[in-house]
View 1 (cartoon, helix red, strand yellow):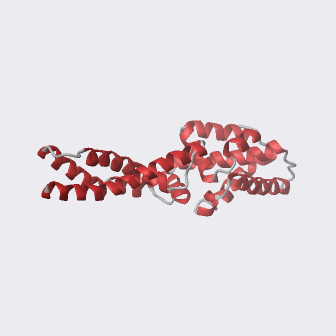
View 2 (cartoon, rainbow, N blue to C red):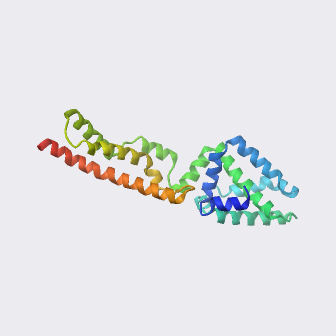
View 3 (cartoon, rainbow, N blue to C red):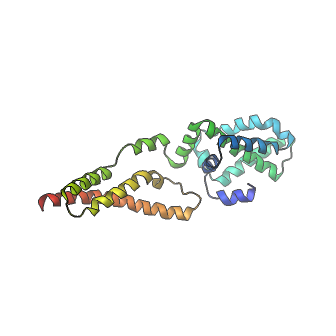
Length: 227
């Protein structure tokens, strides 16, 4: 990926998303191979600096603001720091050299998420405010909307009562809301931002419907009793 492709693909996205994107599209061995390959493209004077460079960059890994910053801002900060470091040892870096310094930094972070899953979890929490364990815990807890609509559907089906479409559609809406609410509530949009916004809006409406339906099911149950 050259500078133009990078700017086109990640303009307006958070730096942590760039790291998670690399982790998603490449496995650990491929990432390590790409890291070594990019390091070999650096000037000879830069090679001895790599260990201290990674140590310096790793000082930022526990900062949520570091992962939340715009990719463009991260690019400028990292390349400016890299330029100062290279010039300090007599290397006059080209634009490609600075971009490669940025690339090795990104690849090193991506490689770390493969080796240390907790690193990936921290970036996710910094970006979207949730931790995978929290999502798992949520997935194991049925919502009130799902419980109410399911009980109503079972009761109505066994007793052959009318208006079963209400709890049936409520179950579908509750299940959809159950598995998508974390993404809908997060700031994550993905590569197709406009499409993601539309999908989030539709899913939010489904979540609202599931909330309304549980009230409707309570009213329906009362109607079944008194009719």
